[in-house]
Image 1 (tube, rainbow, N blue to C red):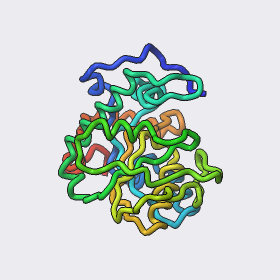
Image 2: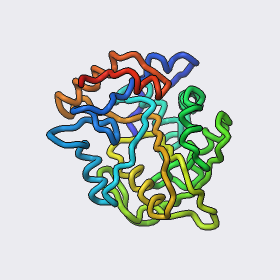
Image 3: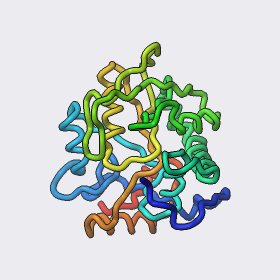
Image 4: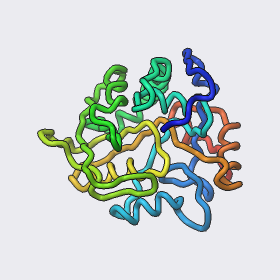
Length: 253
């Protein structure tokens, strides 16, 4: 069960400006795979290393729009834009998620065009039956001329936080598999679900040319280093354009 929002959910265009947090660029503290925190002398964070070891040794690089922590308005938008057993879909949260994702795609048309995806694939929910609410958000936006294809389906095999599985997803029946796809999800925490989905696509011979998530979850209370990185990124100016992000380092070298 989700914890309730800190305050009544609301959204007006412009509210996102005070909520979005620039993801750090890869360095000795920031993971190049998921933009999480690296603890120790490793090339990737623990979650990325464990996901790769369980799957096929590959870390599918994540492009987060923003970092977020709990509590925050962004957390509430991402949690309540879709219905759950205990809560209905919140229209204000849905509006916020659609606006944030739509603006990101518009600001990064050149990046998306360069990837040359033939389809957008949304990571299926662990329990929720299709269609995924994020698929409907993307289709409603109509800002990119790339079809949203329900290419993946959940199997009955277990999948959970810090517990990826090679057979957690399969190709949906009756779907012609495109050669190149952009994988999209709303939230990325440990990466078990998203990385398992990327693995299923790779195993089917499909090239995952990008993996975009709206919110990369951080827990600043996990370690002093996590708090330091999160607070540093909160103080950085947010940048929508991916190319501009890469041109300006916000993390120490």
